[in-house]
Length: 538
Image 1 (tube, rainbow, N blue to C red):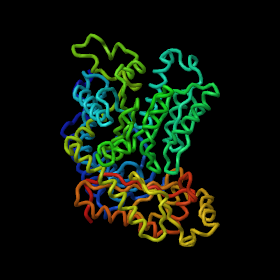
Image 2: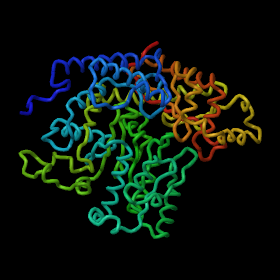
Image 3: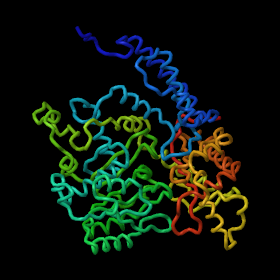
Image 4: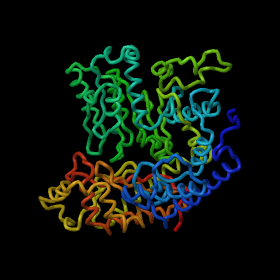
């Protein structure tokens, strides 16, 4: 007869399972939280892929292993992973460690539920709606809808799908054969998910019309008008404009009021990709950068970026109150979304999304907000701006650094000029010589740059080259005034690292992002964000 006892790990031995988990949590506290946030420790113990495979022993076998071996494997996973909570992790649009958010993630993973019906996730269904309501209020909407999505790219795709459905509701049943050629518009500085979304939704990348940007990377409304006219002249039907609030590299904020005027004249859906810049809405000092966002039809916002809510925390917000999400995506599966339940079935939000199983992403933000309050989160955003200005002033003081533009956000873009070109900006061949570095062999990108820089930089900071060749370095803002001094030291350490590796970083800098309207071809983009609540003072 089958054993009907509850199935716990370690062959149903609950005591042993609890002991294992306590040991694992202890390792996490020691190796990730304590050591992983200490400036005296490495960001990553870097290994080449083949060596790392051997060290981890990744093969899955038919026989299980003893708890001691499992704990050793947990330590190895942490040891060789990048510590994104480290004060010298300078590589992505997320970093730092908020303990309240982490606590929320631990609870979420432990409860292991799916956010599709009230009966299976009653706390989180109500919590998600309250969090979304708060985010919508910050946008400027007193009503609306929304959902947490698995990343900002998916939020952008949802917006595209909703805009298409609103215009052509028959497409849900008839598909692409019931549609004319469609056109959507976005800037040349937009996130790559816009083109990916067009391909995924069957619109095709040719349906994406690229609008010119000005010298600061902002969409030009006059060119948007021109592109709409050109699309119509070619027989396409414009249906959506995707503006960006906080572009990935330059940190540009598109002029939303002017873009909204264009959308209103042409009857187009306005989506704002504020995945990076949306959290600026919390700051009374800086929220003017998003003036006009209240006129959008949809907004994508990633609190896991500037607010450090932890991966992943991505909200799609809608101004719509007609249940568009459910009408567009719902399938009324009778085994899950029964209409005769003993509670208000409107609380069963799972039919709003294309997923069935959906992880809980609201708790980490809710718990962090409860702990910090709106004022605490506002200070977090404002300090990120203050650190960006501090970094700019330090760059101006140091030889070999040239700003690409004065930042308006926490993205600081600059050139690190090789010693052989310093002081020669007035030479007629300066830009050409600097640009020649862009034609260096591709081995200067990504992994080999890390190998060349690691010995001197890993003890100080972590510099990782992205696939596109530009360097994205992200410093983190402090949680309180006491952390400002070591954080400034962290930024100084980063700049010192560039100087100590002038030959290598100079080559890397030349393989960076193209900046329209500037004599040079690009620069390094640093994004000062945070927080870093568990920052070592060493």
